[in-house]
Length: 87
Image (cartoon, rainbow, N blue to C red; front, side, top):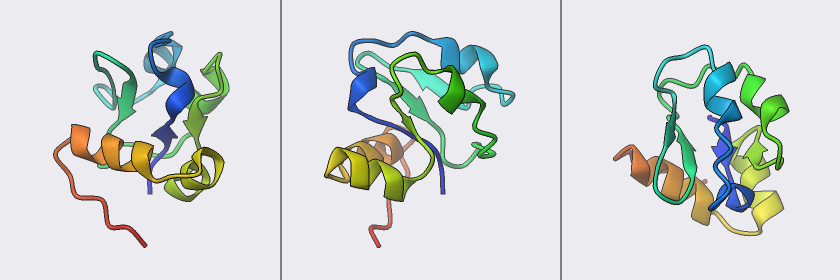
């Protein structure tokens, strides 16, 4: 399980989440949005509280529930060339 950055981050990319993350290269800025590496995220939650647009979800399940789709979960995994196992 990993934190997921949803639609509110698209074209906003404040970057505060990167500054508070204790894991180097866990949160990556891409052209459209930030992405959290599910293999290195330690689920500390620091990024959630720092995000000014409340775009970061505590889990894949929460992201799917709030966004109404698993699109952002899949995009996050695909960004890191990982396969998302839809449950």
